[in-house]
Length: 61
Ligand SMILES: [Zn+2]
Image 1 (tube, helix red, strand yellow):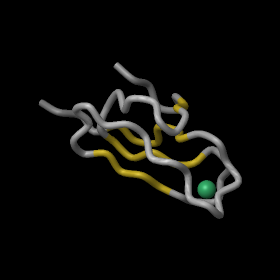
Image 2: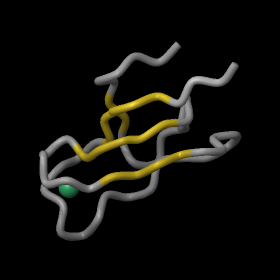
Image 3: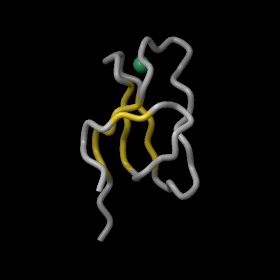
Image 4: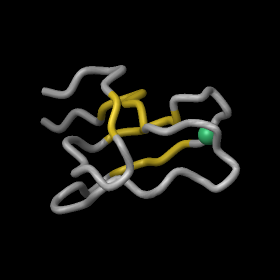
């Protein structure tokens, strides 16, 4: 289980579906719905952060 607040670099394998935010607080978001074999995208060019932070994991039942 991936915990809220976990951080990942662009290019790392996405471990869980959910909403990710950049770590600099400028508000960029990335939502992953199908994570099979997916990797994190680069942060936007105008982003000051360096990582994606798990904000809200999607829970499947
Ligand atoms: Zn940003």
